[in-house]
Length: 174
Image: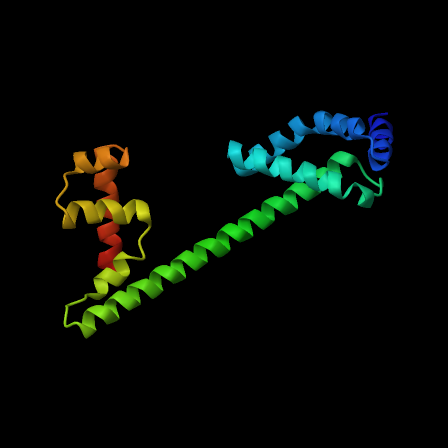
């Protein structure tokens, strides 16, 4: 029954009936959003992906063959969009890591050519995650207390202490 109602709305939407697609959108948006929320654990990302999915459904409605449920087709589109987002985030992270390594090498080279001492520790230091690197920098190079760093970063001083400790432990291993 529901599949037949969906098919009727899809056929109307294909002929340009905006109200028909609006009904499909209203019928499935909540289902789609909840699925994406479980997948991403992020309300904003879920809402964006849901919007993108419904837009893709609208623009590609002619390619829906009706062999399965509309909801299944919609979920497959949203899943592909989510996987694309993950790949994009991974590429961006890799690009940022490569940029950090390049900048660190450039700083090392510039320091050597100007006769300044540059330790490999700085290169390793720049490979740390920001949430670890910032507290170490503020504490050991600028002399801020753990409480002050906690206020700056809006985290507890105990969290600052553990990040500094764990970051230094990583550097010592390197």
